[in-house]
Image (cartoon, rainbow, N blue to C red):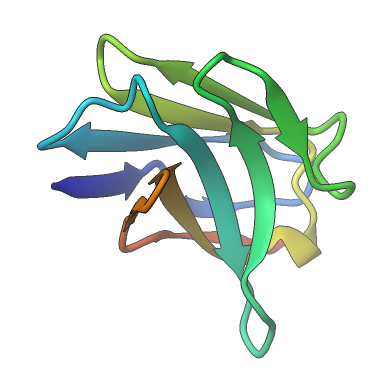
Length: 114
């Protein structure tokens, strides 16, 4: 069972990135899928969640800028981020949760800098 994030990198303020999370070893169909982030010196925080039914919720800082989506057939989850800001710099983690089952990826670094 594995979650692997990709798509992070260095971007200028106002730029965009699309993060991907690929699952292997299990089907994500029954799982609520989320993106979390952790900035240096700060606590882990929820960025966005998409339920197994496709309903999406966002942290206040992401509303209007971030979009979470999922492809159950491809076993992937995406986070489209636009109008990125300095404060979006963090390691972004993919999370899958269902009942007592919970899986984390190892994260992908997003750095917003001029």
